[in-house]
Length: 126
Ligand code: FES
Image (cartoon, rainbow, N blue to C red; front, side, top):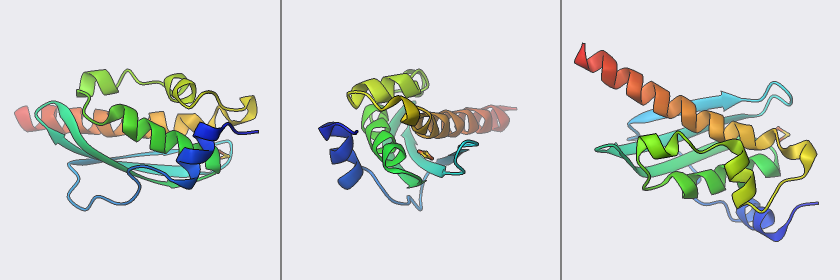
């Protein structure tokens, strides 16, 4: 059902864990299954210097989260906010159709974190 890349990211997830000194934390949840995810960002200038995640979800969600952190690390906030769940699934070599919604968790949590950070910056300027 899952390809080797997905299994690799599920059994050996990259960038997993909490980040106590994160600049911002994003969250997401799936209405379909109740699974949730948090993403932590360390931002330097306008770049994602470090990123970590915690996912309380299925194997596809964990693999997607792991892949997303690898894709987003080092990118500018503008570049990272363009990463979609389809990009993550494609980078994983595809997900079974029934599991496509699982990749939303990761992409949504990243968007949430970036939006919160940019909103906070706007708030600080006004
Ligand atoms: Fe919930 Fe995959 S079944 S995220």
